Length: 448
Image (tube, rainbow, N blue to C red; front, side, top):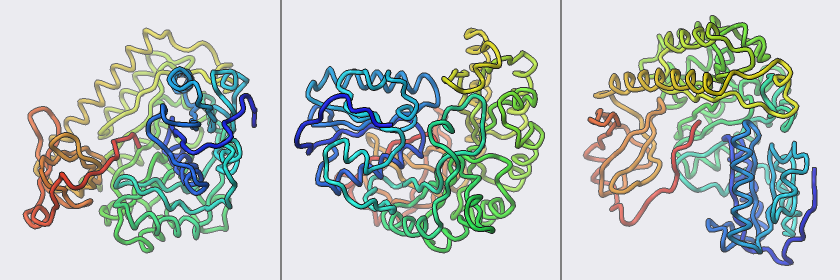
């Protein structure tokens, strides 16, 4: 979908780029950033300086779309000359609402960099499938597939992104090699990464891809982004158990509900509460360090107190270290809107708070149990007088230091009185670290 609304300036040299949504969106934005820079323009952090803006949109909830519309209005108020190109999932489903917002020049469904360059009036360049210019921060996203063949009744992402499409392994390996030169961790991302390879020749799966990556880029840590619990096969589990420094022992396994009745209404037919619990419990029993997170939807149409109790019981039965709890958000054209009325917002808010409190307690217990243990730390950024890092099991740790630590190191974690974790730096690593005044990193912590 391309809707030309306002003409762009004749010469675009400075572009502001903003991303909403998941790691797949962030990856897509980096591809667009690379294309913009290859075309001779500069991506700037201050929208007030920009000739044009590119906003990568998300449609997963009504909140994400509202934030995007608010940003577009603020951009127009701050810089009346800026013309904005909106791309991504919300753009793909736009009914004219986005196109009608102030200073919107084009609405582009998807994330084709060639279309973005055309919309910006920049010279076209052959699409480079290998992301080479992402040199910010210690972690990089590596997109392995796009789209989804499932039809969850609450989701509009499939409508926006289409069917599952796996990238060829050789392309992924080439990109991983380039990224490994300047990053300590690669996060495999996509829309439904557990289905990787289903549209490729027989025998290629997510686990075989990870095995190839571990051999091909032996000095980086691989992490899986969101992946379904029942799609973590024994080969992936074995790597987490026996090579946690290569494949991070951390899973973000979407749950959505602990009620089988609601799972059926949600269209999530490939697992039950028992099969989810069994798979994650089996893995947790074999991993001494295991970061476990999940998405949960509260207030889905027809959710009863009994359904909510089932979800709480499942959460209590597994060693979650965090949860992302979302009130149900009705999406246009998603089938769930025909199931019935959502739960009263007040009741949904109370149930959400109960799950968040439960997850906070479980997370605190896990951090306390990790105190005194060793951790494989990737340094993310400097914040004030300390550095922030990320462990293999997805814990945030802090290192007070006036010297820049290695990008990746092994240390011992200690629980602080405020519930945060501090990590030590070995004497040899500390001696080799340059003064912090001369170096720094700019990556913040994002949800996986």
